Image 1: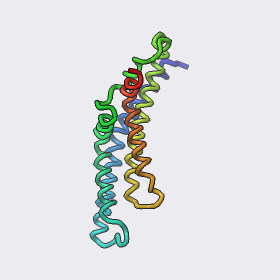
Image 2 (image 1 turned 60 degrees about the vertical axis):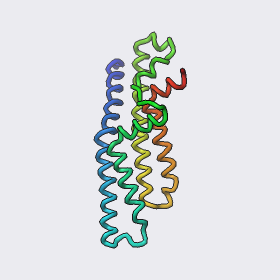
Image 3 (image 1 turned 180 degrees about the horizontal axis):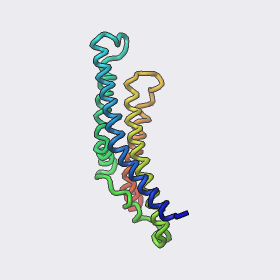
Image 4 (image 1 turned 45 degrees about the vertical axis):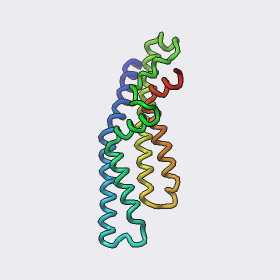
Length: 172
């Protein structure tokens, strides 16, 4: 097995998934959320939403859809709120690795892959947090804690996206 090719491809996969989530998936899901709000608005106008909440679910769909459409800016705003600065590149976390890792090129690359995957999982967490917030528009009892779970996903995801800044704030 060619470990070097495996490490290179794994690193590229993490970066590609991050780009996919931050661009294509967020746009498709954001448009779906906004369209869902518009459908609810049309149904309300036709009198088909009798006995259901009207304004709240529509506003939730529009607001969360807008946040999802601008996912990268939403995540960067949360990072700025948490850390006071924009997100740092994930590889800045490598500055604080022990000397044993710095001496081995293979270990450095393996740690870099790990750092990229942490940032990728952060993007997925922010994405999932916004989906949880959108579930609030359904108004079902099962989604009562969706707001808090969504908030935890968004805050934790932002910390993972800024893994370099998080490590720097912990060790300096």
